[in-house]
Image (tube, rainbow, N blue to C red):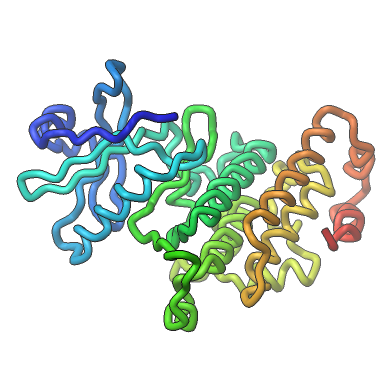
Length: 308
């Protein structure tokens, strides 16, 4: 069990960030700049990310309080750890444990991010979302930029400023009608992330930089999705692992009215991971498929398993 969050003084944070020197900036989110620093936690030095809430954000107080409340209550290995906070001198600061490998977004096209690692990251995020949903919390901000990676490439879901807590299972129909306030929004967003993990950002980006969900759905239904996967990455994949993973991503986007819940998503991703582990341990007969003469032939073999 992690320790309770510490309420730091403003001067402590000024000191460890060298008065918020831009040299220490490691990112800038929707709510302000993020600084790398080192603080003491239970007598031990720990690397942290200090987010300085931008005062121009009109809901900053609400977002701050919500994030502190959520991260203080929820404890899961795939949620970013809250080290502490500061609410002093008209400053609002959130201090989380630093993720050594930054965000998933920065590694989507990285060849060192193997298929096995991508599967484990996906299963980790699904596990975190399942945990949150079981505790009546909707994340509302799932993306490749809010999924951070620690020194062991383990996923750490962050970005809790837009979370919504469902009180006693009650969901306001007005929120449901406009597409927020529902677990379905997390499922849809996670489907986008899964396609990004599989194909990279460039495969489905429009000219204005937005993700094109209909294109992802079309490519899957047209049995051409494998052509958008980096071939070096594709060669690493067990066919059934690829098939299950892509089917899960498709279902998260396509079935908007009745999408799979996170428990179902996690079970299927763990199944895909299990196939890959067997494949890499030379225990799975699908290694023979990789000797096929063309991608088209491999595609036919993979897609015959589409119902999972």
